[in-house]
Image (cartoon, rainbow, N blue to C red; front, side, top):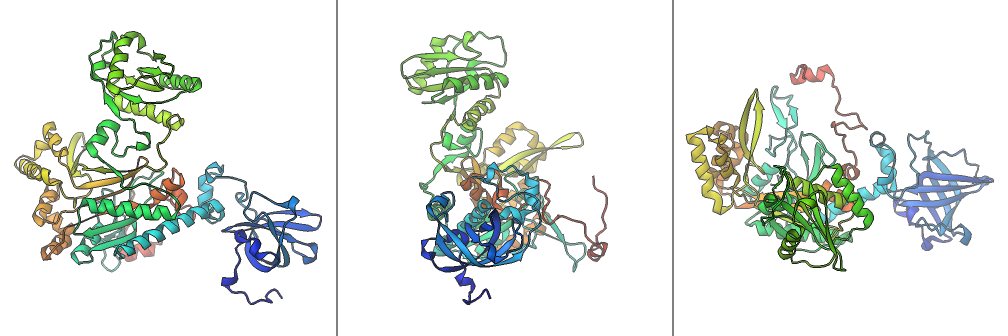
Length: 616
Ligand code: ASP
């Protein structure tokens, strides 16, 4: 009989947690056969559960049937210290082993599609292709590294809930069967059986419901919310993803910043990650101008600078005019001979026209690059020294010669980052990007005509920066008088110059959150709808319930949503969010495990009044 002691789940000892406390005691453990060795009748089995591995010693007297990798075992045994020569320093339980008294094979495993017991330090080193991992996700998730990812995710969400609860936020679930929420993607539609011909839209975010909750007086809302957007997928996008969705009443932008800084500080501290708050705030326009990005990675803070000097250049190349040039100044950058050679090769291969200056502590400085022979080096040297207050030390300066200066300079910067020549100033660089434009202007080809369209940069409920409010009225009036004014570039410039109360939070060059202070004035909201091409009828059909709610006392409010998948992936050092989602989908939106999406029975379609047609 195996159960002399009446074990409950509370007596479960985890394989990876066996330690000196259990020495000479009986334990009952469960797990999968990770590895085994037959040493002349004695079987040494590495038994693995989600916490780790422990060695189980099984003597031939136990008469065990032939084992296979990944069989599921129940073992009762006595914990012993291993003889010194058998200690395994590579695993946490390496000083101990369990001498089995009784063993049950609870389930057998067939030959595996891929090995789970490969020695790997990091899942990034795995050579198994991702499709196989996703098809057999249950095997993939058995890997300890994947369990760690799931555990980290669970903890992050738990600490978020703890913190938000402490700050008087209520977690409220909002419907999945809903109406379209305009977040700029396509909707997933769900046909209604009870009302044939009508559809629910799965929420792109709980945006409208959370605003309604503010009208309802909830005041502080949050939700670990699933968002569903039908868009083209990339490594950091999934058709369904998770946001920490937040909305607050009676606040301004600085309250949202404060809340999120404290939230991240609390959560990350609990996970042993130190960060410093408050986060830096930069202006959207500054970010675009100096980093060519609305999500700059300031771990590598090398802004692009304008060349402000009329140094002559004798190059017969209309693309290049040093007066128009931009450059990046890499201060204190030490390049080894080899790195320099590799860099030169990279620049040559990419056909970049460039010039750079290197100076060392010894006071020696020299120029290199394809433009060297076309400029007066002394002049350039003087200019750079004056502008950048540098003298001797290791630094490097680039001048790039084409109209695509920003892309090219950033290409070089990225090259230096990828090759680990530029060192990050810290591991995790959080940055607020503030004052986003209210609108964007997009061009779409319809037939052979280019159609211009104004749409919200964030979403249509985002309020405008008070100073720019008049401009909104102005463009509204102009558009009303002449809708074709949208084809006037000056007008577009004006539209784009209107700043909003929207902000993003960026971590290491990745957007991890965005939000805004909302419009609560119905009249102004209607003007925004008109500008972005939603007429009164459409507005009422789509968002009538929100406008209606605003008639009955609406508090000023604002919010934000954090992309939790991206945050976890970044903190754990993954490029792909699929590593931190239990059951992710592929680029084509397929779940390789369940084979969703799939065909359905014709009878189901009939019930819904749906007939399929060919789509191309
Ligand atoms: N609903 C927005 C989004 O998903 C976030 C917000 O404005 O709170 O990006």
